[in-house]
Amino acid sequence: MIVTLLLGCPDAPTPEVDYSLLRPDSADATAALATSGSRFGAGLRAVDFDGNGVDELLVGTGPTTDVEGAESSTWVLDGASLTPLARFEGAATALSAGMTDAGPVFVSAVSWEPALESATLRRVDDPLGPSPTTTLLGMDRVNDVTLADLDGDGASDLVVASLEQGLYVYSGLPETFPESPPMAQLTAFDSHFLSAAAMDVDGDGVDELLGGAWMEDDPEADRQEEGAVYVFEAPFSGDVAASDARAVVYGTRHVANGFIYEGETGRRVSDGGDLDGDGLPETLIAAKTWFWGASLAARGTQRLTEMALLRLDGEDGHHDEPGESAATLDVDGDGVLDLLVGAPGAQVSGYPVGAVYLLYGPVSGQWDLGAAAEVKLAAATPDDELGATLAVVRGPDGLGVVVGAPGTQAGSDTEAGALWLWGAAVLAGG
Image (cartoon, rainbow, N blue to C red; front, top):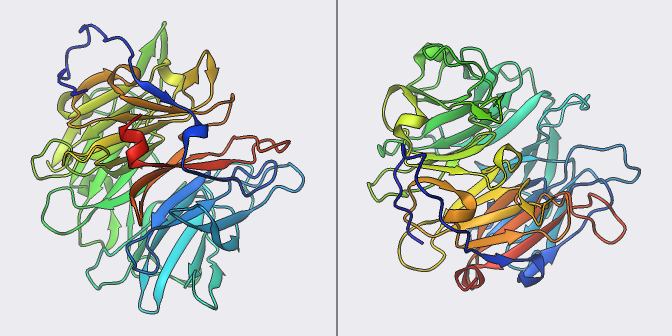
């Protein structure tokens, strides 16, 4: 299905839903490695640690729960078979991997919530080597982490999205906090950052740093809590105020049945690749009700309602959480990127089970996810939260998609969590 409806046409007719529905029993591989309350799959990231062209998977459990025996672990799995290769202490909903002078490394943290009373940010060096080392870095109140070479020295720098202090940028990977000062601290006007990502938004070969300020107010529009995405550009040094941002892109609130819902634009931000063939990447942006795709190359203040390439609405209003996970890949081999959108609150037969929608590219315009999707991967039981996380993996037989469902029950273990792997060929034939 090629999406051609343009933004700004809210009264256009909605096509009938005609997607193919795939259940977990159609997956090529599955993994359920944890016990009740562990929420295996709450964190997920694909990375090629050994440089052989075949990805491994970093998989984290959710925050420690009050369920007796719940695990607090992070695994490294084989990306093709989902078999475990290594396991480390510490839950992880935020994961990122990179390189130091000594070799591969990953950092992990649990996105902060009031029940957390201790620091969760960790670094693991040489995770697949004979003697991996784990260091508890000591920072608490962390929302997200990302590793990227922001100063051009060939080694990964650490970015931490903090609940209270904006985006911390560290040169390299610090050993401890707060003894290691950041090289820069970036702030929004009146919101903390829930998400962070590094990507080259304007095609000049240098990464910009993106922060999702999900509770940001739009002062010019006199609206509150619409959320925004900030774009900061190098060099990163010292205190960088919101007014110094290269661009601020605001979302919008959602009004339904007389209620006004916060926009929460910027809950997640990620690199979507070039969705429209103009040579510049689109940024994938999650909000409470909508999912956006937009080029953030322009400078200054902008609004997604006026400049986004793509807006997708959840099938079930504000409950779906569309874009809580998202990725792009060429599923059908036509040379055009296709889009995967996770919606862990999506319903099937009236029950919230979670789903991932596949949209064949090119994608643009304003659509209901159910109308635009060709394939819907949906969980089998309520509250599985399928689509809370997803990752594209490179295997020996080509690309695949791994989907996390941290709410899944495994046998008698509730909220144990699970992963499923679908090969691109299965999705293309879905």
